[in-house]
Image 1 (tube, rainbow, N blue to C red):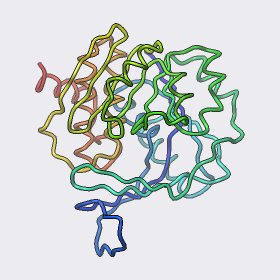
Image 2: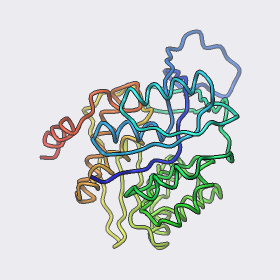
Image 3: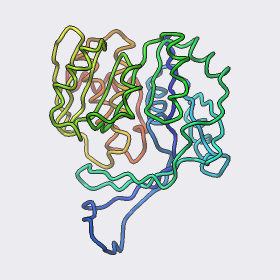
Image 4: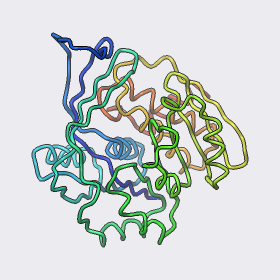
Length: 296
């Protein structure tokens, strides 16, 4: 069984639900439903992959605080193998404002350290023994790039709502073999995807929210997949990571790129029906059933 090592991405978040995102003007919002839960891209991918029986280990940094304790407890309860180092700045926390159409504003009310002392021996052993790396765009993971280069394992990265030319992402782009990105801030996404393939990437996948997804393979093949509109929308939090996880699940089973896009579409579709980072009832059996229903 292939093993994945996920680097970075755990927070404790407050999710606030609004009919519409607030206009940039002073105002009072008298009522807004909310809930608090574990967040961020590493936790979301680890939860989804675990439910899909993809062996994985998550490494992240958390504070020696109540929020960090909640993250440890939630991941352990979900069966995720979680390794962490303690961040002296405390656990990173976000407030996410979500509207009824899937729009989102994320507010980082605290931020984790970009450089800190890590247990490199433990991390190196995980890199050495895994089959693939998920390199999340978390500041501290840049310290680990020399180790990744040393072992030359396949690296998957998720640039999320990337802004073209943002220098912060260049190290992650250089390191990655497989790139996932959203077109939220990149309406002219095709030339960017072509540039990355020209730089030697194996695959680039761009997601478009309700517009589905687009893949470009290293041999120049474009593949488009629409969303499944039957899934009732509740919360878009974690949908991108769910898509990524569904795609990786398919890739590890040697599915075609088209099939992987469809699997990602299913896992993301299930995610938006839930208020958690991964659909509570997600399983291989459910995904197989959904695939037969929509694509069989």
